[in-house]
Amino acid sequence: MSAGAEMLELRTDYLAGLTLDRAAAAIGGVRALRSPAIPMIVTCRDGREGGVHGYPGALRTAVLQQAVRLGAAFIDLEFENFHEDETKEAILSALAESSYTRLILSAHSFDGPFEDLAALCADVHIACPTAVPKLVYQANHINECFAAFDLLHEEDEDIIVLCMGEAGLISRILANKVGSLVTFVSLDADSATASGQLTIGQYRDLYRADSLGENTELFGVIADPVTHSLSPAIHNGCFGDLEMDRLYLPLWVAGGSNELATFLNNVQSRDWLRFRGFSVTIPHKQHCLDHTRKARGVIEPLAEKIGAANTLIRSGEGRLHAYNTDYAGAMATIRSTLGVTESGLKGVRAALIGAGGVARAVTAGLVEAGALVTIYNRTASKAEALAREFDCRWEELSALTEVEAQLLINCTSLGMSPHVDAMPVPADVLKPGMVVFDTVYNPIETQLLARAKARGCKTIDGLSMFVGQAMAQFKLFTGCEGNAELMRSIVCDYL
Image (cartoon, rainbow, N blue to C red; front, top):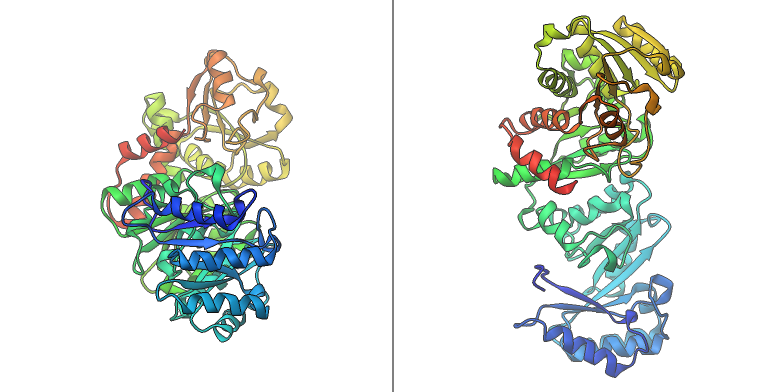
């Protein structure tokens, strides 16, 4: 309880050899943990809906009846089982003897969304008007979370709606903001009882749950995948540092341009969620630029020139504005490490690996500074297209073995956690005296940088670039300067 939970769920179906006496002892033990006693939900889940030991219905019902007598704040019964006359009569009879305990009627869909979420909620209200509907379903894509948000927004009565799985994570984080009676967290990563469940530490510290409210403005990083991103940690840290009513989320938008467009349209059509801005990374930087153009938004000239956006802002009237802060972060990092001004990069031979959003930004900066850039990419046609756009050279990836560059830059995600052993180039490409810059920041020292250092190369990690572009984004999000040292400290603590 020292972790700060405001309520505790006791899953009695986890108890081996369950009896009424063992259940009573467990309930008593939980109540003794804190004085005054913390409100408790007692559940004895049916095996068909995620119960651990699959105890018979009669025992599960008796445990819930006993929990009412012992003063549980809530008992949780499967809505499907409430239709059974004996179970319904027994539960309602027990509740009639208590002025304290409330009934939760729960339904779970482990494969995907319910066919009609609103209709299911209405069915629960009809079956038992005093019960709290608890509707939990697997979200196979982040776009499937919006039905949950809509129902919570429209309902006036107490209700719990959550999405399971990584794609449903934001429904758990935003539960208090959007009106869910409770959300469920675990004490630690090993004790989670549902897919996608946060730990209480993540919920309260990383996502600042205690400060969330209806008016909290939302930001987030759009990516696929997104679990590796440290952007939530640094932006939420800076929001907290400045005591801002803002929250930054990990937004796993799987798929391509169509899925991204659907996500942004979902956000645009629900201004009550108060999404205000996004960081954008692999693979959606060009998709975001295209979407902004189609939506008749505003694109800064630099982002238009680069052909990719890593920052989206929603104006007060909901219009999208696209920016690119990768450019400034990359160039400042290179100049600072080499100890040169922008003119000092003129004539520097640079080999750039990759042809995505980061590669476009770095290429634009280097070409503008007069560097001699050659682009290498696994898909040669993409390297050729990017080189033609910026009037520089390109080569097949296999030609890297002959490279004579002074500056080698990895702009791909190869080597990023969790695939930390991956290398974007063969080790024999690295030569003493070469400057090697890896734009990957997680881990700080990638396999590429470790090998480069061992071969006598000067190395530049991606952390400075990451913090530089994040500072520029924070200014766009808030109009205020962020705390660069706090950002660096947070990243180093996490890594």
